[in-house]
Image (cartoon, rainbow, N blue to C red; front, side, top):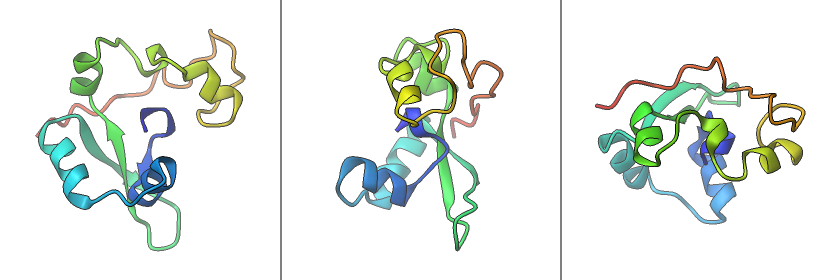
Length: 100
């Protein structure tokens, strides 16, 4: 999920191959691991979800590009970029600080 953000609930469901409840996402938001991101450009402009600084801390990460599989996701189009280790599309990205 973190490799594909910002991501909508529908996209999360597609990723996991099953319906993801609003309660599950709400729980992750209450725990401060997810925050609401920008509205999707898809029809209906559904909300998107992004990881927070607390998410990074919980998994011992400094940045999203430290995630296992980050380079693999770039190569298959999950995260934008050329697939080079020094090509970090999240290097300058702000991680949501909203942990409430």
